[in-house]
Image 1 (cartoon, rainbow, N blue to C red):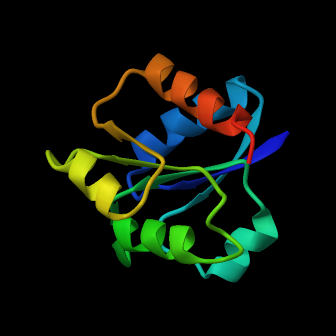
Image 2 (image 1 turned 60 degrees about the horizontal axis):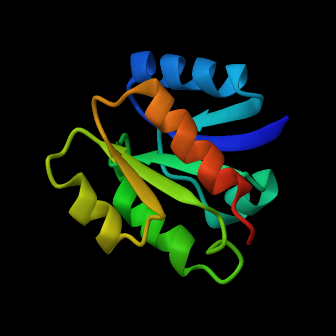
Length: 120
């Protein structure tokens, strides 16, 4: 199974998104907080899904850190948030895509599969 990193501090959203990923053949690995880039490299995810509000800071900061890192910038990142400026937040943090909450689970899967299958 292909690992997918999910950064989400809401347990209900996390449970639903994780189940959808498992159904689609991915292995969800979740965190409620930002983690060091060394841990991201260790996991070597197929894709990263980041909510903007995390328990220890902003997901947009984590996204920018991932996309600025020489060894991590190739990982596809989807920002998702209920913030009405999610598109702007995603663009400023160099995310590959964004989803506004609430979102359709089929839209999430389509986006995930497009990015996960995109050549590096």
